[in-house]
Image 1 (cartoon, rainbow, N blue to C red):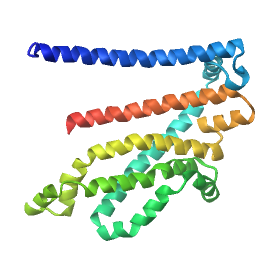
Image 2 (image 1 turned 90 degrees about the vertical axis):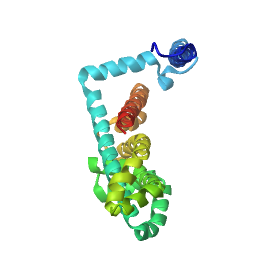
Image 3 (image 1 turned 60 degrees about the horizontal axis):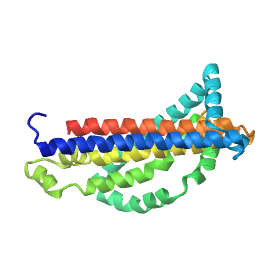
Length: 265
């Protein structure tokens, strides 16, 4: 720090000040929203039965914490999301490598992948239930179906846009296509792989919730659909809040992996 010039020190101070302002503004917006929501529900401006309130949601959450039921629902959704996410990551990398190795295979499968990626995934959920039954496997597959085809297309595109000069250098030095893949294509595509992971973690969560709507007896998706049927709006809104928090935590975990990979590579 002692080697920094006065201009650099001033820039760092301004940057830190900017970050503090952004952080404080975000917190104030959230607190203001919660305060307005609570106030309007208490004075009757909005119907607290339909819209609930932050205090009711907190009490509902605490009640489910004490009986342990909320941990079951959160654990089931988290397990299904992570299972579908890791399977999507593994299968998409494997499929992209196969397509990169065989240009003929990629030409044959490209239109099918595009069509499957464009298909509304919610339309597949009832079909998956008929094929696989109302099991956790069905929900995991539903989570995978939302992300898998787009992930394959994106990763394959990343593989094909790697600097061809580096690949030619590998061949010049006596390497083969496997060496080009392991030494050039995969290392160069790590940013794209992590970027896909950041997108896929959210998509897998969406797919899992769709599956839980239709084929679950546990999980936050099941809790949402059940609470809407019996008009327990506290449960419904609490589940939505927990899903938002879960999505933020999972995304932050992927960002941490991205930073660690950035330092290494």
